[in-house]
Picture 1 (cartoon, helix red, strand yellow):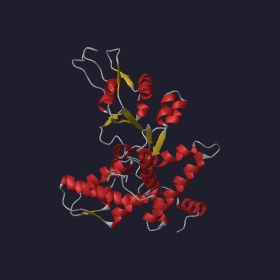
Picture 2 (cartoon, helix red, strand yellow):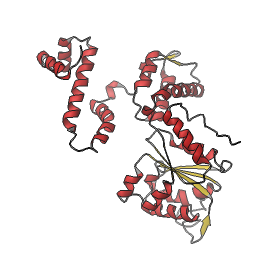
Picture 3 (cartoon, one colour):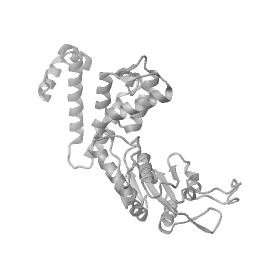
Length: 333
C-alpha cells in the first residue's frame, strides 16, 4: 500500500491547504515538471520537497537553487557547470546542479529570474535531457525531475516577452498554488504554536505560551510576509519576551516610531489597489479616500471613548465637521 509522507512543516486543516496536500499526493508519483506559485513566505520549497519525498525519486538527491540568492553572473555556471580552464578563474571542473540532481529532483526557486539565454539552455535540457558544460562542446545526460517556483505571474511575463513561451508550457504541465496565510486564518494558531515550540527548543528560552491578546493579534493580522513573517515574529518574541507569557506587545511587527504612515498605507492598500486597477471606471480615488477617512474617524472615536471633542482635536478638525462626517458615513456611536 502506498504511504503518503506529509512533511510536518506543512501544517493546516483549512480547505485550501488540504487541497494542496491532495495535489501533492496526486502529482508526486507522476514524473512530470511542476510549477509551484505563491507569494513570498508561503514556503514553496516545502511543497517541492514533499513532492520529491513522495515520488519514485525519493532515494535520489533533492537539489535546491535559489535564483534570488545567487549572483546573476554565476547563475548559468551554477546550473550548467563548467570545465577546468573554461575561463580565467576556472581552476577546476565545476559540476552543475543538474548533474548533482541526477536520478533525483532539481528545485529552481524564482524561475522567473532566469535570463532569456539561460531559459533557452534550460528549455533544451528539459526537452532532450542533455546539458552543455561551459568550455566544452560535449553534451552530458542527466535524469532529473525539475520543479520550479515563482512569486510572479509567469503567464503575464510570457506575454511581455520576458519568459519563453515554450519553457512556460513545460513548467505549467502541473501547477500547485500555495495559499496565502490570510486565506486560511484557521491554520494560523496551530502553525504559530508549532513554530513557537520550535523556537523555544532552538534558542533554549524556557517554556513560552501565547496570551489571549497575542492570539487575537496573530489571528487578525494579515501577514503580508506569510508563514516566513509569522516564523520570524515568533522567534523574536520567544527571545525578547520577559517571562513565560508572550503578549501582543511582544509580537508587534514594527516599532511604531519607525513605522511611517506612508509605509502603513502602502502595505494595507497594495493588494486592494492591484485588484481595483483591473477594473474600469471604479472611481478608485474617491473610494479609497472615503474608506480611509471613515476608518480613521471610527478608530479615533473608539480610542477616545467616543468623546467627540477629543476626537476632533486629535484629528485636527472642527467639531461640527466631525459631526457632519459621522452622519455622512453613518458611524455608530
